[in-house]
Each structure stands twice: as structure tokens, then as C-alpha cells.
Image (cartoon, rainbow, N blue to C red; front, side, top):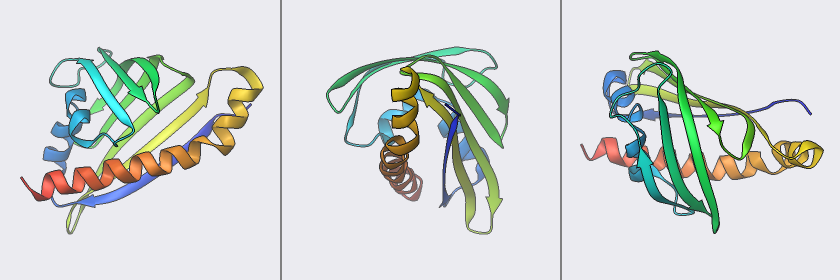
Length: 151
């Protein structure tokens, strides 16, 4: 099964440096997580360092998630790329892209992914995950816009 892709963008009322700094700290996921994601533990450094690991323990839709990610690219203030080292995904690469915009910062999340589980995981990746990601990133982007609007 081929790798799948998802992307979503939003404009934030903040400069890209502030948006980058917010997103390089995995602890901030607590501030923008959708209601379906309950975070129990986040172990990380406060700023992204190339090849550094971070760990997240959560529950989503009642299912436990243990996640170990690694910062693969850190290009301040334009790009953060994390990959899944231990996760429900066979392939996970999440690019956080920040571009200057007349209203502030255009933030784009681009995810390359493939669930584990052979062809059933591939079918779920292709036909189900885009709907889940759409709802999840819409909620995350709304929460991120609110957070920056209130700062």
C-alpha cells in the first residue's frame, strides 16, 4: 500500500517566530488538542532539537496511544518535521510549515502516513484517516487561532 498524505492550513494572527516557538514544544499540544484526545503525559524538551525524542501518552476515542516522536528537521522559524519512532503508524512524518502572510503566519500541517496492519491498515489509511485528520486538524487549528488571538 502506498503512503498517504494529508494537509491543512490556517492563518494565525502572530509572526512565524512565535508560532514556531509554540509548536516546537510538544507540551503545547495540551492547549490545542481536540476533545477526543486526552493527554496523560508528555515528556519532552521545551524546544525542538534535531534528532531529539519526545514521548506522549494519551487516549483517543477510548484507545490508549503511546507515541515516541523524533525531530527530523528544525529550521527556525520555517519548518519543524517530526517522525513517529513508536506509534500506531508504520509511516509518520509531520511537517509543520510556517510562512509569512500579510495577516500574520500561514501555518500548514502536512502529514505523510500509513497505519500498521498490512492491507487493512492501508485501506483504513486511505479511506478513513483523512476524515479523522480533517476533524482533528480543524479542531487543532481553531484552538491555535484562539490561543494566538488571546495572547
